[in-house]
Image 1 (cartoon, rainbow, N blue to C red):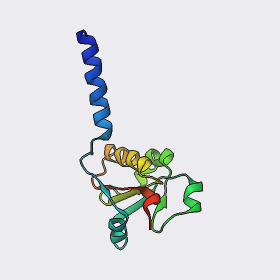
Image 2: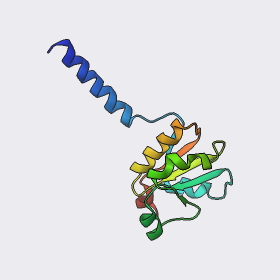
Image 3: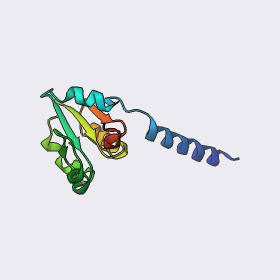
Image 4: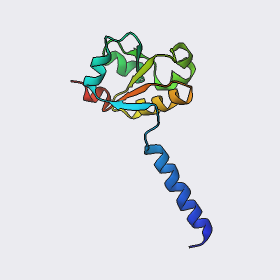
Length: 119
């Protein structure tokens, strides 16, 4: 293999690693840990599923801001408060958490397993 192929392989590995590595300031929490935060007024609860998914099954105090709208509505959230993000499985909320992190939010929690893990 020549040097170009090695560089391409290294770049692909670095890209894949960056997609799966935990991001500083984002923590994965389980459903019980989320429930323990419900009484805290300094926490914002965001459900990034579609309005249809949210309407069919949601938990208070989660507010529905679909992932596709989150970037434009993030300015309505308080950067000083913690943010708990949920979706159906934990994948969209992980994307949402990274998006919020890039927008300057400091304390972000992604619900492991999403609504599928709720009991």
